[in-house]
Image (cartoon, rainbow, N blue to C red; front, side, top):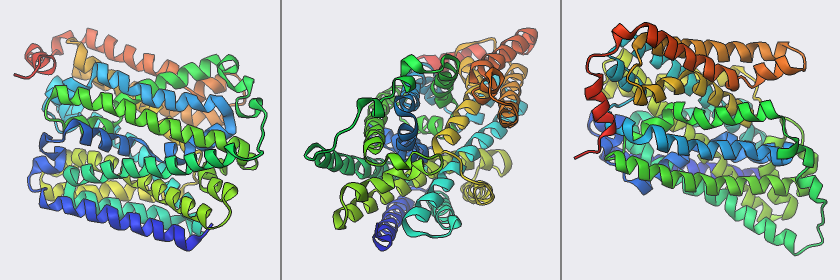
Length: 483
């Protein structure tokens, strides 16, 4: 690999991102511009932006590495990630847009008429967002360390500075353009090398055993029933609880546009997962020696030079490096803009100036965590965030949209039970030896989500006197089509 070429690709991406992002300054004037792009983003543009921020480091680097390590078992993750948008489409996309909220805490307060429920929601949203940003910064550090042998902090700081600057400067309107551009860059950055590598392999003498690519014990027939089921539940429901995903639906002109956007997103992310998964399958043939935990996440960076030694491999590697940084930037910027809206409104009055300050603050916290922690597997790190979101926030959002009997105390109880149950499980899992108890703690979604949902329902039923008086009027707003 050529470090100078890789660094030049990163530099070009940074310049392009800065130009597109700061160009949005011309259109970012009002509070609505900064928080929800004045609710004017059309479906194709919005779907590109959502896909750009959703396809994170865990997808761009980690999915191929997971397929390399696990074979067919690794495909459960993209299935869950993509299918999660079906549930978003069915249950929350249009109602949340019709709610008129800027953020998830806005929706919770308007639905439950409770400042206390809003504050708890804000804390949960911040935890989810920060936990999601950290793997993006780890991925940036890993990428620059592999291709240019730079200190681990370099990539993390570079991404953090650029994200904080663009979000603070242009808010949601500027970030929308950046994320849309970066989706198509990411798709190109993996699709072109994948196609060329497949063409090269198809014309050679390379042979492989099918069981090497799809080991029977790693496929559906050999999958662990509890672990797989729990993981799929978390991935399907976790998408509904991701703040950077939901806030983008507030930028649609109306509920119908939000639904059309979601349908397009399913197709876009599905296409990307197919390409990323293909790179993992290629790696099982071309680079089986990299099937080592902690190393497998770098396999897409190594594949081009394995198949095309020389300048062609160097150019393809540089393209992948640029795509990887686009993944880190797009996801991190989406998370920061959603968190900045929450912090700005809850702590600093919700002005443009406070939004900018909040954007910097919401970047510094995960950067500090990333600099003092050791990267784990990117896919598993992101998967844990889905478990936490599905356990703490998803039950409240779904019931808030579809159940009139939800109360503020019920919502708070559900969020606390889900968050504490999930957090406790992750802390205890490494301390428990192999066995079913370890599996319950390592993949807790199958019991934390029902536990949190039960807490919401039971406490709300015991607190029926606190059902908001205007719930029927608010439900009409959520579910009746706009005039």
